[in-house]
Structure formats: structure tokens, C-alpha cells
Image (cartoon, rainbow, N blue to C red; front, side, top):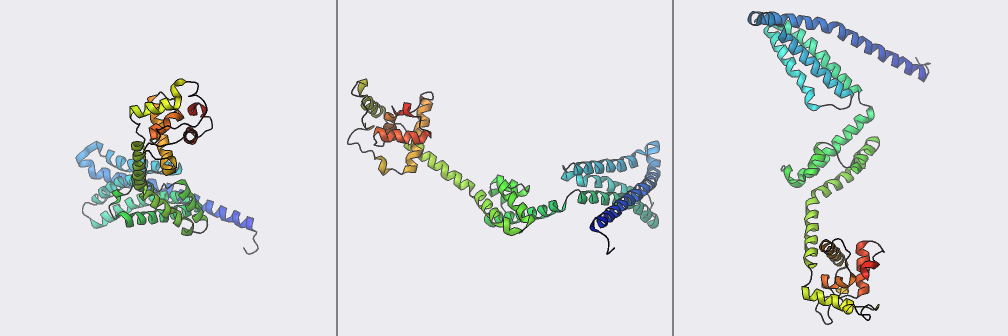
Amino acid sequence: MDGMSPTHARETRSRGWRNLRVLVILVGVGLSPLFFADMFANVRHLLLPGMGGRSWIVPAATEGSFLFLFLLDVLLLLARKPQAWLRGAPFLFAAMSLALNVWGGHGSVLLSIGYGAVTLAFFVPIVAGEQAIRSMSVTDEDVRQGEEMKAAMRHASDLVRSRVGWRRWRAPSLLRIQIRHRRPPASIAAAIREGAAFGGAAKWEEPVEEWVIKGLMRNAHLAARLEAEREALAAALPAAAGGTAEGSAQGTAGGSREGTARRPRQGSPKGSDWPETKDVNPKVLANRVKAAIERYERENGGKRLPAVQLAARLRVRMSRDTAGELLRQAYGDSGTQEAIR
């Protein structure tokens, strides 16, 4: 053995595993029919006085249903689509079969133990075989990633509980579903896989905490954004009809040749108490411009807002050049000359 080459050693181990699997399958296939026949005869004899010739249906139903559900569970497991509820379903019929076979002892302790032992000898190896298939269907890497995922989701659950207590329903539903079903965002899953490969919790602890904090604050952030949008829309309400008409007339100068000359124009009357653009917060001003554009396009079938009307709609003093620049920034392109003119 000491002088065995690595390749020969692997081949020997592989051949040993293959022989052991064959032996396990042969023992199971050889003994299971014997146990089934004894259980079938016992239950049929027990129910014969009451059911007559139909007594065979009961053991066929219990053992047959157990095997069908068991094999279906194994099939889904091999297809990597296991169903959690299906794992326990076959045991209901196994319990019925055990009760019937023990009852077949007719009060004799020894007979009841014997029939019970035969029943367990039939069902337990089948369940053990299913567990062996389940264990061999995943790789060592899958196992490590699964353990890291469990640890990460437990950590996330503890963080949520420390914030909302046991009233989990107060946490955002998306965050609760992601934790419960172990389906975090892609960045968190990548950090967990990295931790499973090397580093452990040090790789995913901080990303998980940031994810939970962001999820818990999502409602507050949404409320703040809604309030900001509401304030922007309220501030961008159109000016009175007279003020709008006056600003439009001043911008176009009655359609005269002098009115179309390229010169700075005010969208609001001289001496107005409206603030100037320099006195308005740039972010608030940008939001108000976008709101004014959206309202104008809804009212005018998608047409772009002219620069000469921007000041009146915002109730902010500005030149036509300033209005044109704000519109260019709001539309996000440089092709807004039609709107500026």
C-alpha cells in the first residue's frame, strides 16, 4: 500500500466504493420483498373477518402509496427540484402500516414486537437509502455554501429582530421573504459564496448588515422621496393665467420682428417678488423644472416646454439663456434648441 501510486490508489478506492454500492443494493432488493410479503399477509389476515376478499387492498394501499411517494421524492431530488412537504408524506402510510402490523399480534407482546420489527425492517432501510441519495446528490462545495447561507440568513434574521423585535411583520415584506427563503440579492449571494470558499463570515458579514439596514430603511427613504416630489409638484403649479400670458407676450413681443431678436428676456415682470435662480437650491430647482416639463407635455400632447414659459411656470426670475440651460439639463441632451427658441 505504501508503494502504491496515487492513480492506482484512486482506482482502488473507486472500485471499493462501487462494490459496496452494489452490495447495499443487492441486500435491499433481496430482503425488501420478503418483508413486504410478511406484512401483506399479516394485515390481510387481520382484516379478513371484516373485509372478506377485499382485505388485500389495505396493505397494497399503505405500502404502495409509501413507495410511490418515496420514489417521487427521490425523483424530484435527483432533478434538483425537491418539495419539502413530500419528504414527510410517505411516513403517514408507514405509520398506518406499523399500527396495523402491531395490531396483528392480537394482544401478544411477542407477536406484536415481531410484526413491528418486520415492518421497521422494511421501511427504515428505504428511508436510509433516500437519505444516502440526498447526501450524495450534493457536492462538498454545495454543502459549504449551504452552511454559509444558513449562517448569513441567521445573522440577517437576528439583525431584523433586534430592530423590530418579534413583530416581524413590521419589517418590509421583501426583506422578510428574502431571508425566509434564503434568496438574498446577487451581491450578497456572491459574498456568501466567496466566504464559503475562503474567509467565512468575514467576507459576508458587512454586506449582509448593509443589506438589512437598507431594507429596513426602504420605507423611510420612500416616504422622504414622496414628500420631496410632492413639494416639488406643489411648487411647480402653473402661475395665474394673467401672469403666464404676460410672460409669454413679453418673451415673444407680440410676434414682432423686434420681439424675435436674440436678446436676454425675462420670464417674469421687472420688480417681481419671485426669487432669482441663484437664490434657489439647485437640486430643488432641477426637480421643479422636471415637474414643470412633465405637466406642460401632458397639457400639450407631448410638446417640449418653451424656455420663455419656464420662468412663469416656476415663478422664478431668470433670463432666457438660463431657462434654456435648465431645459437642456432636464431633457438630458443637447438637442433642445426647438424648446429654447
